[in-house]
Structures are given as C-alpha cells and as structure tokens.
Length: 259
Image 1 (cartoon, rainbow, N blue to C red):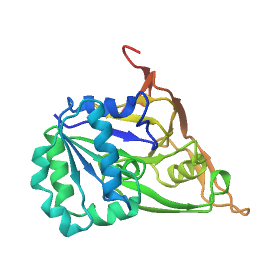
Image 2: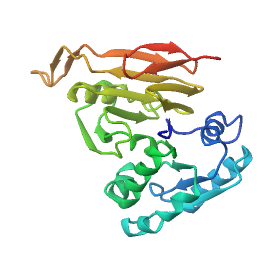
Image 3: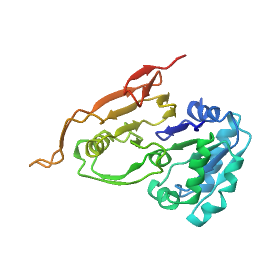
Image 4: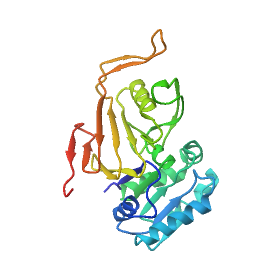
C-alpha cells in the first residue's frame, strides 16, 4: 500500500500538544523515523530538535539523514531500510531540489513509498512535494509580478504546495501560478497546520486553515493586460479547517469522521 504523505505549513508546534508531529508519528505506527536535513543550514541542530520531539511523543528510533551532496545521498540508500518514515525539514527548497531531485536516493524513496514508506515535510520540505514548486516571487499579495518556479519531487503530480501561507500573505502568488498552470490545484497551508494525503483525500490537521484553489475548470484567463494586471475566472476556492477533508477526484469537501 502506498505510504501516506504529511505536508506541513511550517512552524509546527514542538513544545505544547505537538498535535501535528504526534499525528505524523502515528502514521508510521511510532516506528523509526529518518530526518532529512538537506535543506537546512544548521543540520545538526535541526536534527537534534526533531529527535527530541519525536522521542517525546513515543518514537524510539530517530535517524539523521545528513545529506549535503548527491554523492552523499548514495550512502544513505541502504539506510532507508531502517526507517518506516522520512521527514524533510525546512530551509532552502531549491538546495533540496538541486541535491536530491535526480538522485538514486529519491528513486529509492519513491520505490519504498509504494511499499508503505510514510513521507512528511515542513516549510521547504512541504513545497518540494509537488511536481512543480514556487522558488520565489517578486512582490506579494496583489502585487505579484513574476514567479520563479522549479521542479519538486513529484509525489503529488498536479498540486502546487505553498507554506507559511496566511502568515506571509502568499494568496496572490499561489492564485497567480494556478492561473498560469492549467489543470493545477494550489494548496496553501498555514503555519502549525498540515494535510495528510491518503487514498485521494487531503485531511486537514492542526490549528489554522488550508486554502485550496482548484484551477481544473478555468474558463477565462488574461495573463497581462495594458495595466500589467492578470484576469482569471473559474478557480474554485475552499478554506478548510481541521474538521474537514478534500477529495482530489471530485473537488468536494467532506466532514472528517470522528471530528
């Protein structure tokens, strides 16, 4: 069975109830977790922080995947057999992509996910989950002029993930990119909030909101007019709290059982 994904909007609670990280540990039955710190500029400190948190919620074995180059990554392939889940930390998603996107390590992850490997990521480790990702944008909100896109890991084929969403005012840049990329669903995840991708549904976990922009039925788009503005029509907008889930196939929102 294909392993579940947990995608976190950043700044998940590590000191209080730890709802999101506890839920991630639960996804892999509190088995061993590998922490991939490739995106971070302070990998040892970041690993230590997550090691302490996962130990505190009942995970006994937490391993460090301190991959700093493509050559490094080959040495960690055999280590994948020792974990039930991988967690990608925050940092620089472009660095993460440059090191791992075409590596044998990533190919091995995808093969092991087919057999049930659980994968999670926060902040930069969240953006990387889609086929494409936003690297940077000129301007914010309604003043977005240009977006630089890059290739992600492709765990989710037609989704563009954006993180720290409400807190950093990223509505404009995500809807802009959804408008430019036909057939795409944009998912903006607030801080201390996550989605769990399981059997075609996005389940919301955490204290804030997930914004879903479904651009699969765009009926009108003008990329730039005389005033250098963009006009889009046909995007379906959903705002989901932790009581709800979203069906990727139908585009419908449902209440989560047991909530």
